[in-house]
Structure formats: C-alpha cells, structure tokens
Length: 72
Image (cartoon, rainbow, N blue to C red; front, side, top):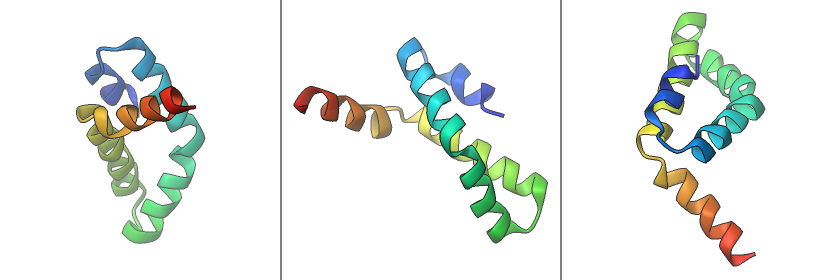
C-alpha cells in the first residue's frame, strides 16, 4: 500500500523515514478511516492517499523532523 508513496520520494533517508512512520501508524490510520468511511476498500484508499500526500510534499514532514534534529 505504501509503495506508490515511496516511489515519489527521491531521497533514500526520506523513504526509510516514511516507511517507519507507515509501519508505526498505518493500523491506527486505517482504524480511523474505517470508523469514518465504514468500507474497507475506501479506508485503505484513504490511508494510501494520506501517505501519497506526504510523499508529494515531503518538506511538510521531513523539514520539521530535520529542524528538530538540528536544534537538539
């Protein structure tokens, strides 16, 4: 489900970070989507779209993470 989002990212570090975020949170994201959409296929698609949106705008997530690492 995450392969489309990973394919968008050019940076290996970002792909690894997004994979880890997916691994840690996909189940919860899916549960939230199911509670709102009441359809497994729609919920899976919503989670995929969310991760694709992150991949298409990586600075929204990875820029924040980088700032936190630099300031620590």
